[in-house]
Figure 1 (cartoon, rainbow, N blue to C red):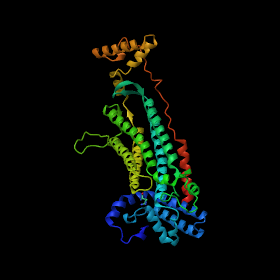
Figure 2: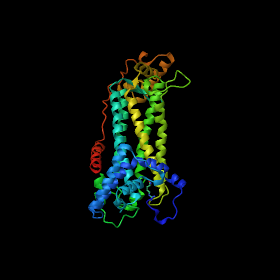
Figure 3: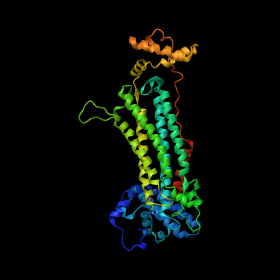
Figure 4: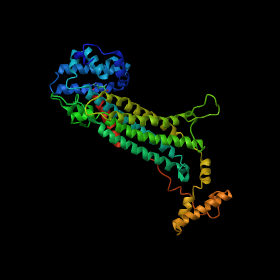
Length: 443
Ligand code: ARG
């Protein structure tokens, strides 16, 4: 333990297990960030004359050795060592006696904050790439343009085109990336140096650690820094909750359209039934819909941990870790699944045309045509409505009705769109910058 001094008894195993079993498992994801953060901290301590050159280079060498070990064979964290911070300090101290100095002017409270910021930062950059790939899939699908029905109240409303429909998703995905950019800017602030909650009397240079770690600024007020744990997590989860709601809507739409035989989901993305030989089920889509609940609950998890905590550190805050990790990783996986699916969808043109006819989808065009010829819109609406009623009574469709067939030519041109996937420029440039930050630090 890092804190044995004031205790005369060792901690109870069951309590340690309860405190740290899950946490040490999750902390495996933080290993590279904890090492990078420690290297930056130690380099800063040396620059400030707090550590001697020999001390800092021995610590740094041990940290880099650990990093390489992690890269080749991974590390095993035991609940008894509480967390990644303890593990790494202990491992470094085994290599060099100067390891005992690496925690000068630092607390695990600001350390875990920095680790989590770096984790979230990487996740946002990864999410941004994935959102772009999904846009690309829609771009690809839009090339197979053709008619499509648009729905309100799940009933046929007006004709659309496949490219128009694809573009609508791409526009939403671009907003999702903007939302990520927005949280990224707040995530990317340096908490290190806040220590336990009150900063430190050591003459540290927080701006220098920020530069080394690629943070764009310093979270000046130390108490604010420590108390902000969970805030960026909730913000990110809220952005992801919106993305997942979009994916869930898309999943539901694909399930529904395929159930109506308007759309074919590739066989390799479906699964069968153990009893009913006829089944071809869209499990993956159902799971995207189902896992949206998980991501939404991660947001509530993080928010409700924050509720009622006075400023400072509390172990409750450790609970924001599973929330944000599960939320981001579930979202990443869900976007990937949708990216695969969308690219390979096949629309059933004949059935779509039939659906448009049966749903009298061109009725609004007819009303508009009449109104453009001079009839007040309300009257035109009534007249078009009467035509629909007549068709229904006679069992015919609009194109067979003498008063309607001339009237409207499908508005396909207006509804054809050129779909263009677009990477978020800011996040893409950050991706390059952050890669360089780590390669310099961990080289
Ligand atoms: N494992 C802890 C967490 O994730 C690290 C901080 C521990 N700090 C403390 N004072 N117990 O929150």
